[in-house]
Image (tube, rainbow, N blue to C red; front, side):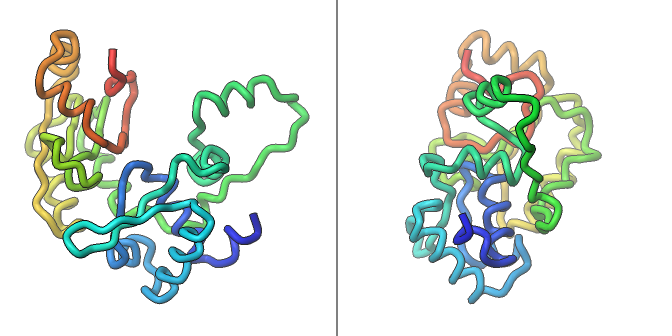
Length: 212
C-alpha cells in the first residue's frame, strides 16, 4: 500500500478515478482536473498501470485511462477516497465489532473535481448521470440525464458551464420524476438505451437508475 500513496499527484489521481468509476480521461484532461504538471501525471499513471489499478486504451489517437473495478483492493480504496461502499463491504462493516478502528477519509487533502458543484443550485435533482462522451459509449442516446424538478433555464446554464469545462458540446435531457418512472414502467426505448449504456451515476436518491 505504500506504493500507492507515495506522492501528492498519486493521491489526487486516486481521488479522481475512485470518484468517477466508468468514466475515462485522457492525460491533458487529467492534468486540468487535478491541477498537476503533466510529467508528474504521466509518471503516476504509469505506476498505477503497472499494479493494475487502472487500465488504458486508445480512441481517436488519444490514450484514455479508467479505474479497473476488478482490481483486488478497489472496494477498499473507493471507500477510503469517497466514503462510498459496495453492498458487500457494507455487510462486512455491519458484522464487524464496534471497537474496530475506523479508517480516516483521505478526501480532505485532494483537490475537488472540476464539475463537482455545477449542479448544486440547479434545482431538486433526484437523479443525474453522465454517459455518452463521458464514458465513450456511442450507443448511449444522451451525455447527461437530469431527473427532478429542474427549470429548463437552470439546466441549460449548468450544461453550458460543463461544456466550457469539458471543451465539447453535450447532449442532455431533463424530465420530471413521474415521466422517468413511467418510461421505466413501460420499458420505454429511451429508458432501455440509457440503462443499457455505460454510465456514471452522479446522483441517485431513489434507485432511479436500477433496472427493475
